[in-house]
Length: 325
Image: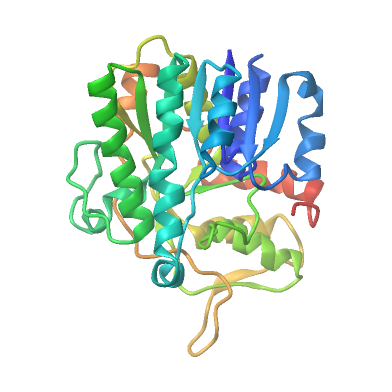
């Protein structure tokens, strides 16, 4: 199959590309940012199946040409993961990228008979419900707060409405707190994972000091990629919305301590009284996402828990340390 991934140079897009290429699919990455040279090299074994097209998802002419060139599946992965400061200073761009830019892409997909569109949403869509429910199922009422969360929830609802009106195969996935290979700081991601912040501290040869333990149902990017690959290849998914998560919570502190134990000289700990932290666990703790829908329909469950992701990302970090920009 031919798959287009918007925002494909982001770390989720790159992990998904790797999984799809390994399965023999043709992948086109569409993004303003180039593919990092180290990632390009890592994907070089599948160079004949991989294409990169520079472009902006808010450029209607560019996205029309992208879809008109022909594809079977479009994965909508471009997003601004905004913090409160960007919410206050640039709400228009957040909504333009995260919500409004998707409409022309879906219209083009309809015109050119694209088989399926998959929109990458987020557990952030649950918002304040994450503190009110013990488990977050796909039909749990949502109460989004930030503009990122609001735009993600709205994009789900718009996609579901158009799927009904157009009788098209459009679905959304809510990703839990994702971390993993190729994540880098800066750009459109104002809130990098604490795992990425921990590795950045280790890159600087400084202790990783957390402001709080950061307990969530963290999900490794390779697991996300495998789940998405199943949805790309599925014949007829039974639902329009799927959670993707480990379904089990553990702390970023626990992860960082385990990672540091593999690398002499690295240290990860909580900040002491009055001590400034250099790692932010990204917001309040919330309930874990339910994972039964993906498990029952596709037999998928995450393979990487805390220990497994530490071991895998440790190997990746040693190979690419200081070489991902």
